[in-house]
Image (tube, rainbow, N blue to C red; front, side, top):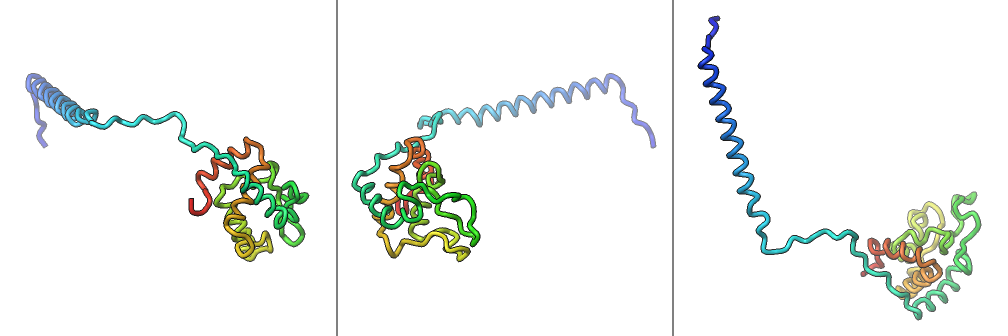
Length: 182
């Protein structure tokens, strides 16, 4: 196979042509980018600026008449298991021999406030998940016993026994998991 010989003069001309072609590609690309981006900032609508903190609806004041109704309902239907003051049963985190767990507290020491209003409503209305799945007896459903207003009032009563900090945490959770129909 023959070897192609190129003179130094020819090689210099080829390199110069490549540099010129590369320069043209760079200039053309930069011009195209500038043209495409040039119209982006020309919107007639102002560009919304992100806020430093998410918008959270302020925590509402508890309705006193609903809290009173909820306290009456709680005393009649809930206190026998969850305690007069919402203190729950002893060792509520440990299963009983039959697999059930003792009734948990509803005060700040429990976990009720970790759930949004929607979840709390469903548990009272439909009973505990374990009961619905037939795994254990668990908490019974109160859908046939309590009205929607009474269930909501009972949840508001529980909120009234929490610290303000706990109420705020639960309120933020309820923004993602509100009462049904809200």
